[in-house]
Image (tube, rainbow, N blue to C red; front, side):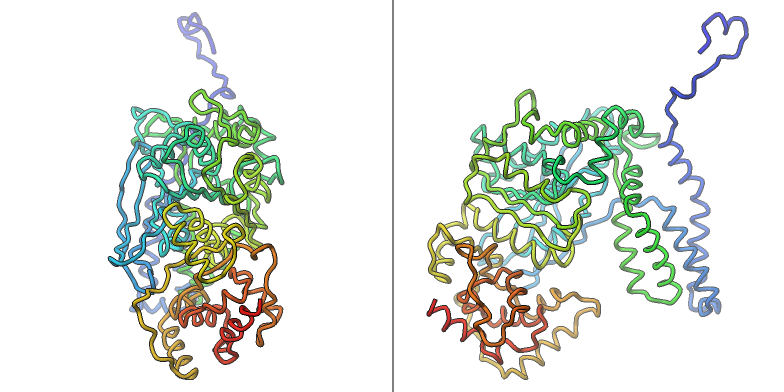
Length: 581
């Protein structure tokens, strides 16, 4: 730039534009503002062309133009924060209402409680804190996770606040603040709380547990479940890990940190914008997203409303993003992806070293997906290595075959295979339910407490409730079919099973003593069915022998057996074989 003399002499100053950051955030906002009238016009045209009174709505041209207008409107829209919208859940086969309440609040986070209106005689369920990732998407990305855990747990979730909505006067928010928030929340919830960390929060959750265990804090979590988290990114590095390593923290500070523009409440706060994170997510699978929108257009043209609605539901959530504070983003990149601070033992919290070997009371379960392209296989399991003093009775690891990153915490495989195992682990480690669990386990299967890893993933059948008279197989099949007929056409196998019965309660994370019974000894069970039962956590004859009518109905429907279990007397056969073994 020219000096003061140049100004006095009337010379025009020269600027080095290469050192001036471009106002990308402002340009993004301006672009949205410029397109607003066009977006409104496109939406109005769509409504006009879809009106059944309009003759064009019945022509290929009209449908094509309406589809193009909707695609344009959705592609240029800024998506707001979605709602959880969880108003009911199923408990003991009954529908109960759910009320969403804010029970704890700080500038960057609110704690939501999904309060269930449970019957007065309902046994107390484990208290579960789900820590949502602060990685660009809102906590509602875990709607399916919350919905799955609600029937058998008292669920809370961290609802992180968009950084651009937090005034600068509320201060900074870094990685240590994140850890402190988790500790404060656990203190608010009280003892015997179980914590589930999905992806990114696995590191701060593990750090918080280490600090609380070292301090012998009575509010330390009873168990923690880490799901697809980057505990040690040196193991099976993914494209995300390699990219971070190739750039270094200086590059990220210079290229992706921007100031929040006016008129947002966080005006001038330095943030990592959500739209950049979204661009990175979509860029990893750009061809898949392009194909999805092409298919969406085709569905609209041919009138496939169900498929189009599924697309809307997914992208309404996926495209809703939030900003992260500069300090939290850069500290996370450096600690997790560049310095590997937690597994290296160099991570610090408020001036003290975080030592995971101090964790001796908080049980640890890790969950990974075979095809995870964000947190590679082995990265989450590494938590067991650094928690070196945790006894084996407080450890568990599960790798789900055939799922990617999002399949670890959502979708049909999560509901049918992952969630039951997590529920079993939580109940196994719960301080209040431990005694009653041991009694139930001993009654159902006479094995030593040391080798038993069974826990109940649902509530026990009420003793006072008398079993209804047994209907004929034909009448029972007709009853089940009538219940299933009331469901939507696209209902999943699990939805159908839940409508007619209840999931088997006594399940195992692995066979007792590492050896399963040969279920093929039961007439009607072959190698394929045996493998399916293993995936449900059924490994031994005594587990089948204790099935109730509701549990039989659930398995029959879920595995599409069409009455085979009762026709072939699986339960009676299992009782006989259980006595022999």
